[in-house]
Structure formats: structure tokens, C-alpha cells
Amino acid sequence: MNLQTGSGRQGLSGAPEQAGGNRRISFPPKAVYIHIPFCTNKCFYCDFNSYVLKDQPVMDYLRALDREMELTVQANPPQQIDTIFVGGGTPTVLTPPEMEFFLASVRRHFPNWASDIEFTMEANPGTTDLEKLGVMKAGGVNRVSFGVQSFQNTLLSGIGRIHNTDDVYRSLDNAHKAGLDNLSIDLMFGLPNQTVEMLDESITKALELGLPHYSIYSLKVEENTLFHTMYQKNQLPLPSEEDELQMYLLLMSRMKEAGYKQYEISNFAKPGFESRHNMTYWRNEDYYGLGAGAHGYVGRQRHVNIKGVTPYNQGAAEGLPRLDQFTVSEEEAMEDFAMVGLRMLDGMQTSRFESQFGRKFEDVFRAPLERLLQQGLLAKRSDGDGYKLSDKGILYGNDVFGAFIGHLTAEV
Image (cartoon, one colour):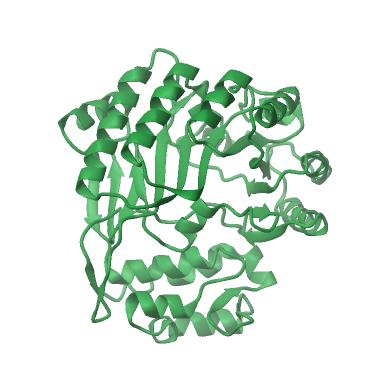
């Protein structure tokens, strides 16, 4: 099994581009991603752009972020914003006054919100209280995603989390008291010393909460993490591949039985509660990306921001704080469309591909498509408009995605 849990290549942009002989019309993005890079501590598996909060210039960072928002909307004025996602790091380490300042900045620079906007903020249990959640609610946040990871305290301490299960229940209770009911929690499997029975218990406790959305990811041992160092020294007691497979099969079965739709490889929701912001990524649509280390993708221009907090602050004082910015080639854009689109269990639509690129999907990807269909890793969508992962393909996502990535760019 080689489950793929990352969200794939992402990026930012500007002017209309030529696509397949047709002009690609570029509209302002309807999605905004904002990065708050501070954490109370660094988890042992985390390779995200995050920094321990102690002694960090938080207000300087929030002012720099305000400046980047100002410059961004000057360059690409927004129209209606459908989704906002604040990630990290742990955005909820901000104090109530800092949170209030930050949310006021967002509303000032991106004022035209859809009436049904999805405004998500990531949170860790133990970093929220009723006051802070009230500030979030007043500032427009209407969806909170809690990083729970496990309902066993021994596993939580073993991966470097600072919260315990009591914090989980307290945080969710406070969220409800603050009027925040669109809640999601993250769980992980394949953790050191985790058994199939432990995951089963965590799923049971998670489902008892009756939340509208759950994200359940497999552990990936990434470079530049403590777990990677331990893995290289053969000191990381990971479950066997067979146990990890059983964990994934178990969670798919349990979530289906409980009435949750698996709409993406690692995501499960009640009808109507799918993460609309993440769907932006999986449909390869444009989005603003703001904050230290953030990626953005607008009009087939991708950018990556400066990562360090102080360098980012300095960069924002001088202009847009870019580490890199480049045009995504048509070949790479088509590969991305296939790869991220197939993460969704409903699959990708060839009609959308042809509308965007002016070419037939089957003509562009004939060789890998025929091979994956023959191997039983892909299947036709029931409406005939595109392809989706088969039951077997869900378990071998890396093989499917890898068949598309580099296929065209290697030919250029």
C-alpha cells in the first residue's frame, strides 16, 4: 500500500494565458489561504513551515501580513470570496487581541464575502478557550478544524503533541458554546506503537462526537523532522505495512457505516459539509496564498513566499515577500489537473479539462490512462465524464498520481 496523503503541487498568478490555442480567461481567485507559522512546540512528525512561539515577533508578523494583503489585492483585486482557510503552525496560539487584529485585517482587505462563505481556522486542542473562540466567531470564522490526531494519550505524547483527550472534549464543548458547530477533527494512523485496535478505538470516540467532517491521514516520515532522524537510526517503531493497510480499510469501512461519504482519499463528510476550500486545490483552481512560506496560484502564476518570520517581515516591508514566482507551463498545469483531481473519490471530469485546456484528456494522457485502466487502478465515472480511482486505486494512489506527473514535462 502506498497511500498518498499530501495535497499535491500548489501554486499563484496574474494575466490570461494561452491554453491549447484558446485564451484562458483568468478571474480573481475566490479562495484565500493565510499562514500563521507559530506553534507552542514542534511536533515530531511536522515538516510544515512553523516556529515555536516563544520570543517570536507576533505583532510584527501580523502587521507584515496585513501589508502583504494590501499589496496582493492591489495587484489582483478580489471580487467575491467564497472560502478562507487559516492554517499553520497553529493559528489559535494568537492571543484574543492578536486574533482580533488579524481577523480585522482579513475583513478589511477581502471585504466581499459570499453569503455562504466557508471560513476555516485550524486549531489545536489546548490552545483555545471560550474567549478566543468568541473572538474568532465575531471575526467571521464559521468552521474550525481541530488537530486531534489520536484519542490515546500515550500516542499523543509519543508524537510530540501537547494536548490530551480531556483538552479535546473541552475545546469542542467551548466551540459549540461560542456558536461554532461546523467542526472537523484530524486523526492519524500508522503512528509509532499504534495498533489496529487503537485506531478502532479512536474512530469510535471520534464518531461519538457526531461531527460533520473528519480528516484521517496516514503518517508520512518527512525529512528534517525528529521522526526522520529516528527512522534513519531504526528507532521508530512503526506499524507493519499489513497493519497500516488494515487501518485504512478499517477507517473506510467504519466511516461508511456511520453515514459519512469519503469524498477524497483522506477526508470524510456528511452531505454538504465537504471542505470547499480544499476542493479548490483538488480542482486545480486559483487561490490567494498569504503569509510566511505560503504558496499561491493565480492565473497560472505560482508563487512561494519567504519562509522565516523575520525575513518575511522584512520582505513585506519592501514589497511582496516572494521567495520565488514563476509561470506554470501548460504541460505541468495539465499534469496537476490530473493528479489532484483524481484525489477526489468522484474523480476528475474530462469536460472541465477540455474546457480549460482546449484538448481532449484521452489524447494528452493516452499511454498512462490506458495502462492504469488495464491495471484496474482507474475506472470510468458513472456519468462517462472522466475517470476516478477504483477501489484498488484508492490503496495505490502514489502509483496512479506518479503515472501523470512528469509524463508531459519529460517530453518537452
